[in-house]
Length: 428
Image (cartoon, rainbow, N blue to C red; front, side):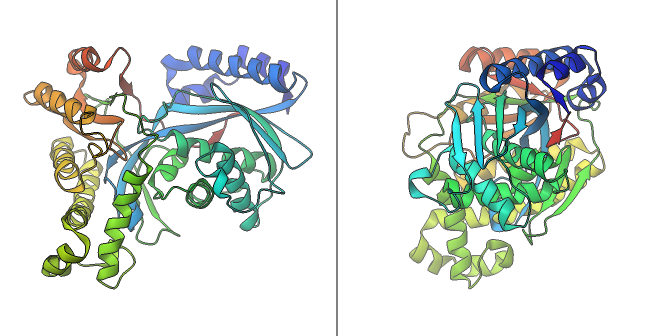
C-alpha cells in the first residue's frame, strides 16, 4: 500500500500507464494521469497526506438497446463508456464513512446506526452509502469505514448513469478495502439496485448498475433478476466507421421521479391484471385480447407501455444478433424503431409536467434531419423525460453533427464516447 506521496510518484513514473491505456485509450493517458494526481491532492487536503490510499474507477454507461425493459425482467444491450467516476479512498478503523464528491457537500454516514431506510434520507447520497453498507452486511460481506474523495465527468442528469456509477463506486471501495476484491461486479450491481430502491427511495431496474460495473458491451437478460444472464459482445464501432454520440439537452431530472416511477408501475399494473408480477411472464397476445378491459381499468397509456415492452424486448434480441454478426445496418434500423416506440408508445421523451420544455424532441428532430441521408441512427437515451439523446454517427459526419446540435444546446453538449473494456475496478 502507498501513501499519497508514494502514489503520486507511482503515477508520475508511468507505472500505471498500461492500466490507464487499457481503460481509457492511449491518447487519454496524460490527461487521466493528471486527473488522478489532482484527486490525490484533493484527498490529501481533506484527509491527510500520510494516509495509505487506493485508486478506483467506475464507468458511466450508455444503453444501446432496450428502453425501459429491465424493470419488468426484460432484455437490454448496454455498454460502459470512457466517462467515469474516480475515487481516492483510505480505510478507517471505525464505522464512519466520509465521502467528499467534487462540487457537493461532504457526506458523513455511520453505518452502524444507519441500518434501515429512513424517509428523511430518501433522495440523498448518504442514503446510498448506508444502503450499500446494509446490503453488503446483509449478504455476509465485510463492511468498514473509509474516507474518499470522488470526482466525476459522468454529468448528473445526462442519462449516462451518474447515480448508478456512484452506487457501484461505494460497493467497489467496500469490495477492495474489506473483501479482497472477491465480491463479483454483478453482485455489486445488485446491491446498488437494493440501495437505490430501498434506501434512496427510487424504483429502478438493474441495467444501469450492471452496465457501469461489468464493462464493455453487454447483453443482459433479466428473466431471473437474481441471476441475470450476461453476454459480452466483442465489437468496435469505431473500427466500423461510426461514433457513439450523446447529446445533453440540459433538461432537469430533479422533479421527474414520478415520471420514471410511472413506467414500471403501469407495466406491472398490466401484468397484475393478467395474474403475473411482471410483463416478462405475460404473453403479448393475451394482453391484446384483454385491451378493452385494460383500457377501462388502467387507461390507454398503460396498454401502450405494455405493448412497447413486448416489442422492445424482441428488438433487443434482433439487435443482439445483429451486433454479434457485425451487422450495423440491421442494428441501426432497430435503433430507429426503438426510438419511435419510445416516443409514441412508451411516451418518455418529454414530461407532461412541463409541455413547453421538449429538448429531447427537438434534438431527435435535428438528428433525424441531419443523418437521414448519411446513415446511422438516433433515439431517446436512458430513462428519458429530459436529459439526452443517443446517435450513432458516421465518423466523417461527426464534426457537422456536433456543430448543428451544439449550436442549439450549447458548446460541449455533444459528447463523442469510447466504449471502455472495464467497469468497476481498483487501479492501484
